[in-house]
Image (cartoon, rainbow, N blue to C red; front, side):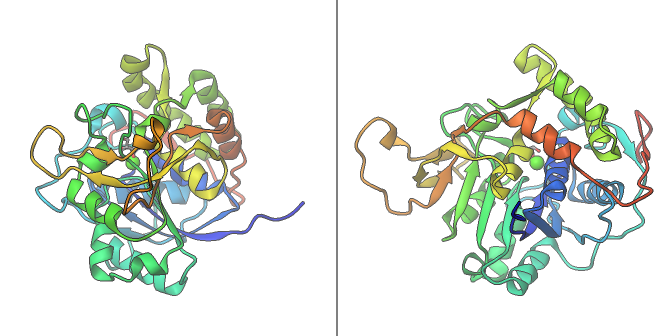
Length: 337
Ligand code: RIB
Ligand code: CA
């Protein structure tokens, strides 16, 4: 059996239940060597997301991975307060994890990203599963960033699918359209994982039960968190299940799953103040007609997946192994400061 090649990864997130799943997926993947994590306001504030990330890392036995605090406010405007109705008051489904001993590292998330890109020229891979404020900031800090990183995978946007914040805008893009416009205009190898594919690959209650039954505290805690997430998605799917936004982006980034349909097209972000604000305008006219490649067509937009994602996700999360003595240190419904 050949050992998969491991790539250095920078994760940018707004942790978040599905962000927690994406983090756990990366930690369980031999193809990913997570070198740093930055947080941004989205599902929760950047500070609460950082706390959640540190606590999850400790539970997973990876407390050594540095976490940097990122932007609290988007490029234009102020943080809107998060999505407690989706992710719980603490962002992780009101599951209370043991507080991590580790502290945040000095410096901003954007500074961490730029430093990692210089430390691993041509090798660093970025997975961004929150608003793109930190990534846009990093581009301003070092315009050479696109040349230095291998690629960037972004969970965000909606191509043919409706939005989940406005009729046309998806949350990660809607929370900072100006940053998203900058990031999608940069000249790098970019993959967009929009709602088209994340809403059509769902995790069912049977999968959640498999996580709860796993012999490791991380999948068990994730199973608990998913109880909250499922209650939100019940109104949309009519049964206990959930979309799989961020872990699907993680799996595509590491190559654990493959895209079946993923045209490389031009993507613009609407930054006007009209009803289209935050929309990802993907030039998919080639779907219906013989259409010549457009200038600026550099974004791979994942529209359909090969195979069934949920069983793969469960299998990868079940394979998590921690150091000896990792214990189940969490409780559901406990008060969170
Ligand atoms: O629209 C879904 C995205 O918004 C996910 O990344 C979720 O975690 C939230 O950030
Ligand atoms: Ca997220």
